Image (cartoon, rainbow, N blue to C red; front, side, top):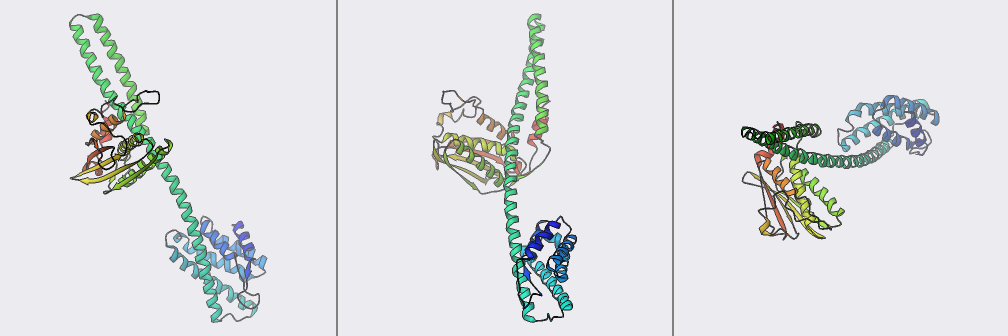
Length: 409
């Protein structure tokens, strides 16, 4: 508050005298005071006005000048809660009224103290004009700075959401495959116990003992997997229902893969065509599926190319299409491309990739009661992946993921 008072008093020294004589001055002090009040709403406006008024009265040698800031601060305290709620135009009208009223009271006090006549129409009009120009200039400056701050906060928030989505999709994939592994372990354990009983019935005690030992070891592996899954589910909280619309999902998928294409030093234009926009709680599996398909398309393009992501609604289904201008996929591979282990990606040393990406996508799509197919892209010339989901399952937010993970035994 003392800082505002000192800054205002110093700013008031840069002044003009609109009337004859030196009994009334207009300086930068009021503009400084108003700007500080707008940005420092946590302070007490009335106390700040009193301190500023005292400092101004001492430096300017005028009690009326100090009274102006007290009245102005009191008026601003009446509208402090409305500063962020009303439009800048309405806020300007309020501040102009406060500024003009404060000037009137200051002039009346000066008239009483100095015995001057302050009731001149042209002078009142000049004061009103100055109040309008000054108030709207400061409010415009305040709004511009506030918009800049909001843009910075929005960019930071978007960055955090993108990071959370990356973590969420990663955890989703890990828990998804860990659950599949646990189901496989459960089946192997059951088969091992069945083998143990059959060998025992055949009086093959040595082999039955080995089968029992294997079953017990596999069961321990399952219990360890359950503990790991429980830890992952604490990080990936499936009970928290958060919605995201399809436009936002596409935005983060496209943004992330544009960065990926730049990292690979490729010039790729990613287009998006959104003809329907629903809110869904299944944004993490959808981001996982689309991100995998689009990143595959980025990798399939050599140096320059185009990728198009299209979302439409047809016959109670939401259809996601990812088309690229890459080399495409041979027709004979269409039936096996979603099988685990299949890959067309090789490193510079000729080492094949793990080939779990598209099988991962297929499993997630099937978990959401959807289907995925690959075909030749007539428009782009490369591959075209088409994913179909029932509209009801996507927009109603059925707890597919929660049920899937809860049945882990």
